[in-house]
Amino acid sequence: MESLKQKIRSEGIVLSDQVLKVDAFLNHQIDPQLMQQIGHEFARRFAGQGITKIVTIEASGIAPAVMAGLELGIPVIFARKFQSLTLKSDLLISKVFSFTKQTESTIAVSARHLTAADHVLIIDDFLANGHAASALIDVIRQAGASIAGIGVVIEKSFQSGRAELDAQGFQVESLARIASLEGGRVTFLD
Ligand code: 5GP
Image (tube, helix red, strand yellow):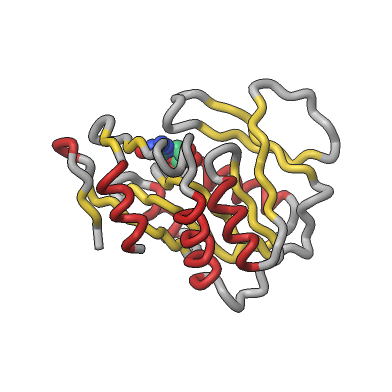
């Protein structure tokens, strides 16, 4: 997606060989027009698949997920993150190791909103090592729902997440694929 790549080139900040900061348009300040284009592009790539719900993870997945939900005309669920959790019977729970915070947290989705009748599109802001996606897949499977695919705004292709999701047979659609952040430069894969 060319407009996204241009935005990354002009406003993204390479913090290290591993981490890209995009808080000017995605992770803190949000560019609504770009988010709308992102939602449109996800809807185009996953059109006609009978998707009933989008599942994302708070907080940075919410903006692109809502825009995709608007385009597809379906509800969006964001998994809540808990530091500690009093277990409740109607919660679907999994653990996720945070790439940026380097801590483990618990995520939860209410079983009232996700059922075996659902066909789910997972959306997130970044794909690095695939921990967030794996936790969402776990929660969706606990509900007995099926998974249409995974939509990612920015994929860091040099980390392991993409290959792992491909190996599991998922349709993964990344709107910008980064081959390298070495030398403070963003190099795109395609
Ligand atoms: P993963 O779970 O795939 O290892 O990492 C994805 C999650 O970590 C995303 O939800 C995102 O919030 C965060 N993340 C991973 N890499 C980056 C990065 O380079 N920059 C930012 N801002 N967040 C990242």
